[in-house]
Length: 244
Ligand code: PGA
Image (cartoon, rainbow, N blue to C red; front, side, top):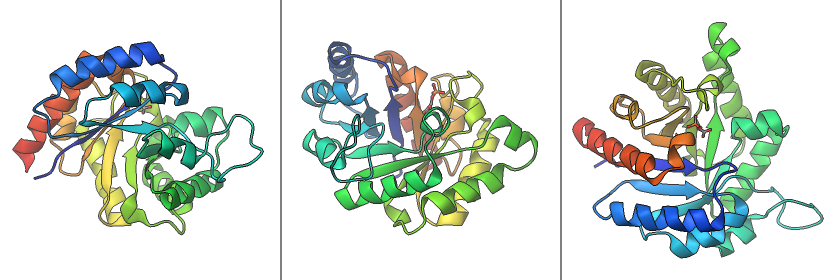
C-alpha cells in the first residue's frame, strides 16, 4: 500500500521550546498514523526536536554545505546533522535559490554530499509565474532536473515540485497542474517519489492527494500549527487509501 510522505518545512519559525510543545502535541494525535512524517526545523532547533519527537516523526534539515568540513563560516556539514539524528535534507528550495544565490552547480554538489553521507535529499524544483504563463514550465523542470541531478543516483532522491508562484501565496497549483508536473517528472526520471509543495492546507490537500502521481506534500505555513499539520497528514492518508 502507498503511504503519503508528509513533511513540515518550518523555514525560520519555531524555537527549541515551541518545537517541544509541537512534538508533544503531534505525538498525542499521531498514534494510529502510517504516513511518513518528517519535520524540517531550523538548525538550532533540531536537538530539541530530536529529544521530543514521537517515534513516528523523523527529522530533516533545511540545508547543508557540500564540503565535509573546513573554513566555511556559518555553514553546517552533513556529519553534524547525522550526529543529531537527521535523516533528510531539503536541497535547492526556491527561497535559497532566489534569496541566497544558490546555483544549480551548488545544488548538485549538495545532493552528492547528502547522498554520500547517507542523508535522503528532498530536491525542490519549480517554475516562476512568468515561466508558466509563457508555457515554459516543463522546460524549466527539465533544466533543473538535468542540472541538479547530473551524476546523482536519482533513485535515492525525493523530488518536491514547488511552483514558485504557489509558495506562501495562498494560491495552490490545481490538482491537474500538480498531476501534470509530477507525471512529467516521473517520466523524465523513472521511479521517484514526487511530493507537492505550495500553499498546501487541510482544505486543499484531499484533492491534490487523490492525484495518481502526487506522493505527498512539503508544507510550509500550514505545518507550523500541530492541528493543521496533523489534519493534512490524516486527510492525505485517507485519500491514499482511496486511490490505492
Ligand atoms: P507554503 O510553503 O506551504 O507556506 O506555501 C511551502 C514551501 O515553501 O515548502
